[in-house]
Image 1: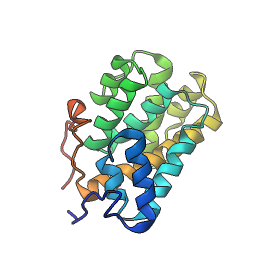
Image 2: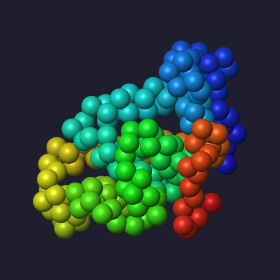
Image 3: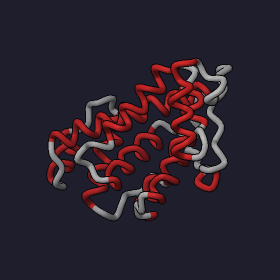
Image 4: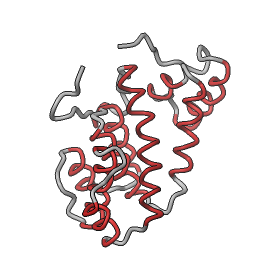
Length: 188
C-alpha cells in the first residue's frame, strides 16, 4: 500500500538512529515494525514511550499480553499477533491463553476471559463496551482504573497495528514460528 521500508540505525532519519541503535543492542535485531516506525521518528518514540508506560500499569505481564494480543487479533494484525505470541512465550504466559486468543476462543480462566471480552469490546465498539462486559470485568476483580489501563494498551497496539497495515510490514524471522493470519481476511 505504501512505499515504506524498514529503516536501520544507519539509514533512518537522524532523530530515530539512536533509538534503533539501542533497540539493536538490547534485542540483537531491529524488529521491522520499529524500522518502519523510524520513518516517522515521533511515532517511533511515542510507541516506545506508551509501551513503557503500559508496562508500569497494575496489570500483570499475562494480563498485558491478553490485552495486546486481543487488540491485535481484533485489528487483524498478523505481525503483532506473531510478535506478541513470541513475547508471551518469553514471559511464560500460558500457551492455552495465547492459543485461545489467536483462535478467537474463550480463555478457560474466567478472570482473563473477562479481560479479553472487555478489551475486544473496547476495540470493536470504539470505546463503548457494553454495560454487561464492563460489569463482568469489574466482577472478575478488575477496577475502573484498570479499565483505563486497558485503553492505554489499546492505544499502544493501535499505533503498531495501523503502522503494520499501512506499511505491510514483513514478519521478522524471529517471529516466523508464531506466524498468524486472521480467519477472515482484512479488507484490502
